[in-house]
Length: 86
Image (cartoon, rainbow, N blue to C red; front, side, top):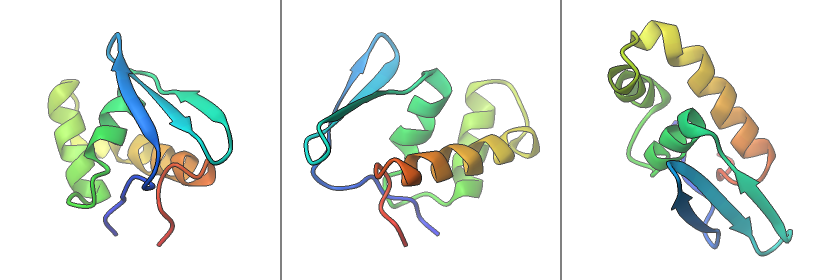
């Protein structure tokens, strides 16, 4: 699985956090710093394990410590319609 951001969303970095506008639903989402890093890596080129490895390096953790958070965040982003369904 290679999580990919839903096409057509408008997003910007604001103070180290991602703010996403979904014009289709007219909803605005603000991601915390950790979710913002995960969002940035959901580019269709990284698996959740690769995202966890990169996130772990960023926050001085091990991939095993963050993999659950990565899967949970990706699932939440998918439920919100921000990550394309497989």
